[in-house]
Length: 72
Image (cartoon, rainbow, N blue to C red; front, top):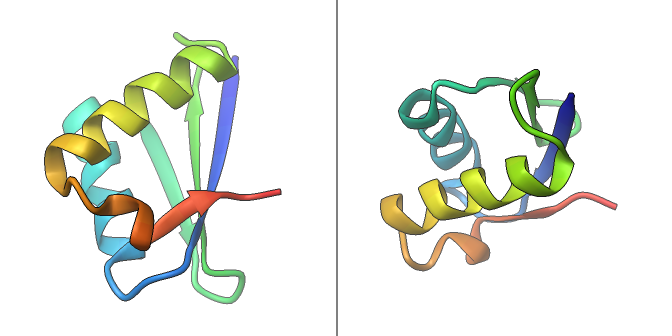
């Protein structure tokens, strides 16, 4: 089971995270207070999940890293 949390750092962070969840069919929740998106998958481990989500984000917006970053 993999979990990936991304922090919204730009104005399109929430939109991109939700769209990446939709196109990959991976569950994603967004916490507006913490400005974080959490992806949850039973099909991928954490490294695989990161790769799938990052690939999807790159396809949605090549400049996605100005809107989202991996949460620490």
